[in-house]
Image (cartoon, rainbow, N blue to C red; front, top):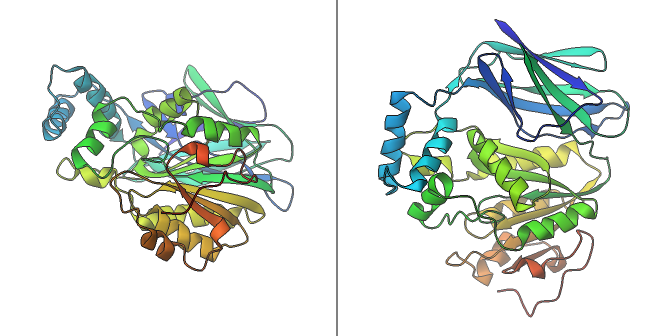
Length: 352
């Protein structure tokens, strides 16, 4: 069993992509946050996986060609190079039986060993203090670090879906969905980055929750940074993909989102939350259930109306039954959303 060194410090340089070289392998860590505990310490949930990338593998090239054919991408097109790059992340060799050692404030924790999927997960404790905690990996002659923000016990948080909420995916059209996931440059939903950036300036912290594969974190994280979306924690799904079932990689099961969001609410009981999603899949139904279960925490729900989706008033009336009318609304243009989580939203004529 091999140890990979991971140090949690209170100062140090930040790294943007959450991917670290540790000798022959790489470690991907999901962007996370620190929350305060009753004893004055800070608790940091840590999740990631250890893997090796083999971009020159003939087998992986063959799989990429199969996927390209399935979604109509020619081998000699610019889109094929992008598809191959993203498929490289999905076709990594996951490293099992690896243990990650973490140290913060003089104390040490051990996560692992990794399972067959290379995943490790756990929680580490940082001492009392202010400012960002630095998460740093050290391996052989390389090292890197990322800043982990401390999120106060009270304040506003935004829980946001990704596909068709902040990123154009077109989940209702299978071919377009797969093209936008694997072969097209990611594109932001117009107006959403500016709105989220305004909320962040007003003090809100953002949790991005999506059933997209964890392996796609690097391109998703780069997309968010380039688009101007605020930094936050990312919660993606552990997916075992199959070339025969590409849809399963990007479709969001209700249970996944429900579990992640409930966990975030329960771990931060004094914070107020805004849930943002879209009408393309089942965000209204999932968010409505959560809002009824956590009425003191979930103060607002905003649902983006996706063209071609079921945007009937009856659907939203059922999804948000028993919730006060001022707690939820649908929108077509981000300009309809409030400037800050605790501000009043601009008036609209009526709900659809």
